Length: 602
Ligand SMILES: Nc1nc2c(ncn2[C@@H]2O[C@H](COP(=O)(O)OP(=O)(O)OP(=O)(O)O)[C@@H](O)[C@H]2O)c(=O)[nH]1
Ligand SMILES: [Mg+2]
Image 1 (tube, rainbow, N blue to C red):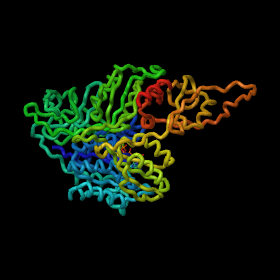
Image 2 (spheres, helix red, strand yellow):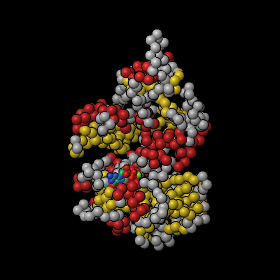
Image 3 (spheres, helix red, strand yellow):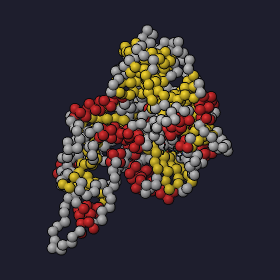
Image 4 (spheres, protein in one colour):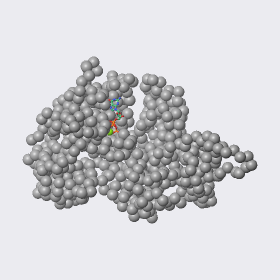
């Protein structure tokens, strides 16, 4: 039997997981000497590359001496936390990274808690020790405290510690040691991660933890083999979560090595491989021996906490920029997404209206962003948290929020959060004039908070949050404190009119932008909405002042990304998303309709 180690790399967002995997690939000699690869090679899809974040967990394998090490790189952003939990069941040990300055963050807590509960063996990597602000000793203490708080066993508490600068391919066992390479990481993996249990001679049992889709071979289930041996062409039984048994055949068996996938003929207990040929395969299914099919424990799939409604775009500019605009196209695309994305759910709620649920705004905007790139056009509504009854009590999701702010601004931020029903849990000085403040807050109250927070802290504040639990409903929370600047007419915007509107708030659009009645052109500096005319030219006058228009000084419009816009909108507003533009609009386009409907609402 081959010697195997299975590990996952887990951490808070941006603490350097994917960069560390680059180093593991490189220093194990898995990349050929002539093989070209990008930085953060595992972040392979376009949005991952552009944003520099990992969205989907991905696996690779390296050879180190006589060992095969299967490595799963996981996403650090809280919206994808459910994925991490599933991945953890597939491995025997983990590398927990933590930034040598930032220390324990919300998602560090989340992943450490899950990892400890599943009984995994950790190796702690204090990363980015090259940062001038790094305080590795403090961060080590934070990790010990965290492990103790989360009920680590003695064995788990006794973790090896590695100090690293993953980006430079440097690691060492002691801060006092000379800089070394990743040898100490490989050795720690081989020595302290338990070898996989299970027996190649037993009947087959493999569990699917990720789905992939390939135009040629169809659905692919990436799986950990816990028992038995599997060969290409084998007949198998698929044991579904609900107890149903479905016959299947492995048409292709796919192995991983570095950045490559290759067809293989056989694999056995302990390994991680991919199966093609079973169209009905789902995450959590057991691929079993047909003569003795025994299902493994079902997999816990995190429930969504947030919903938005995707709908057919019905704005006056509909159908001009996208290719796929009909309800049917939209439904097909969303249904396709649900086939491989187990963390999301879809419900048809009306003519051309689809309720999509997920774990957070980022997860939902990544889907929307992918659809834009595929030439879809649609609208999305304000995100709403999922409220559910637990033992007869109405409950809503709560989040653990950590903010780092310059000391002199902490008062403002605490006051804002107080109004949003946040409960302060701790406050610590972080050095360099920053304070770290932790809160527990209803997820509902966080919607729209980020924009406010960035304004309040002049872009210097950092906020991070991650799902805590469902708790009893907290009642009304304060939402957006400013109204919208709404266009009263259709046409192309002119500098002259924008110049006068910009005194009334912050503009979201620039000159020569197509607008329509009911489209939102900016944020009002007061609480109420204000109807404005952004296309009015300068009245003709006798005084000829050629070039006067160019002299108009416009403040650059605020760039509203998909996430920012989604967080900003209220219940009576929508986002219009097309391949070329993201527009913000009122649901009811004319002022009359809006008045009529607000009266009805009251
Ligand atoms: N200074 C410093 N920067 C690093 C180091 N390792 C990674 N980084 C940088 O940190 C940023 C995030 O790195 P990633 O590897 O994408 O982090 P990640 O944990 O995979 O992030 P997510 O997958 O989005 O959770 C990148 O800009 C890296 O270049 C390091 O050792 N030192
Ligand atoms: Mg990553």
